[in-house]
Length: 184
Image (tube, rainbow, N blue to C red; front, side, top):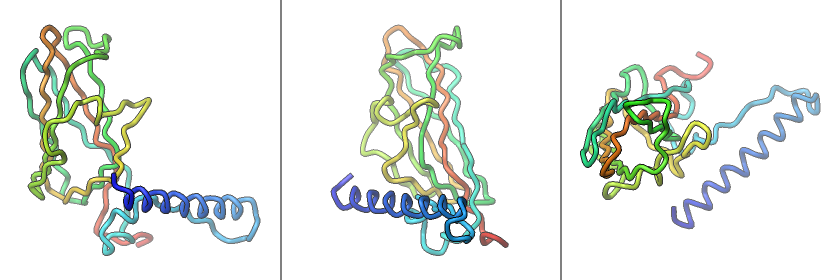
């Protein structure tokens, strides 16, 4: 993230913080108004979509068993009822022979491609641990990724381990953006 992007994110957080403080005051009866909760992600949406109804959603990709020194590709398709803004990527890695055993040091690589736009999310395969968070420590994207409705998103995982197969469950956390306007 360059300095301009960092400044923009910081300004959005400061603005949201001010709005939350005003909403808290309104809830406490400070000004008698109706509080509104800001959306930190509005600036990441095209202007025409900022007033559309939104709803939390998660798309998942499950890799049942990636053998040692092999590559596997999985896909999810954004439903055609809405566009999708990915704000975090979380996952878990377990031993496919004993799913109660977490794998903590697997040498995995990940690539993500948005089939709708034809864009790769990275310039080359990235270390899995640098991109994917956990349920306990989510990996929020510094700049959320917008995915058009009906688009296929392909995820490729390479397991570079010499002796440990892996089961990978990925969650692309974000929200749907519907065609209907908010409050309609």
